[in-house]
Image (tube, rainbow, N blue to C red; front, side, top):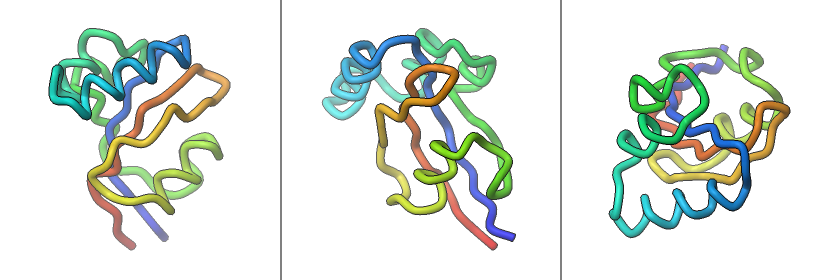
Amino acid sequence: MATATARHILVETEKLCNKLKKEIKSKEITFEKAAKKFSKCPSGNKGGDLGRFAKGMMVPEFDKVIFKDELHVVHGPVKTEFGFHLIEITSRGK
């Protein structure tokens, strides 16, 4: 079964999500610091780290990015029922 590790930042608005993505890309703030400061998910306390999980354990919109898109790149905004996410895939395995 496919597995992956990733980290994410969950915020309420697409506008804030885009702002954080821009700041992370320009190195104004690190992903970890942005997660700790802005993420509404408890994983924010760990820099957004979600640990290892299998395909199907996350919402479909999340899985679509995690198991298809490029590693070590900030993806998003990804809209789910919880809000807007920035996602960085840190590893993928079988």
